Image (cartoon, rainbow, N blue to C red; front, side, top):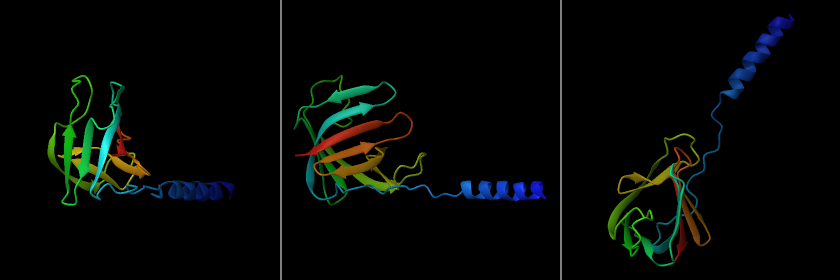
Length: 140
């Protein structure tokens, strides 16, 4: 009898532990309003970079037509700043990577920058998978 009870309890624990009840956060905050963000830091990657930018050197303006206008005045080629000055398209896409820290990620010019988190005057793009980058912005 104890063996049957143990088997039932073990089976029940197995079923319960296999549920998909992990909380995946949607992007928090929304850079979609026409607002300009200044890139202040890029960190992470397998190389372990940590590049700081002076305020106003690299500015990203998110427009309501799903474009972002980037003004890049960075002259230090050793720093990772991703884009030259210009207009690029962006979209939110369903996060299919693991771990799924958020429901949607932001893609700019077909580059997935990961989860978006806006808190006050700070915005972060984070790629919590595969030694990704963290981009930190401040409202301009």
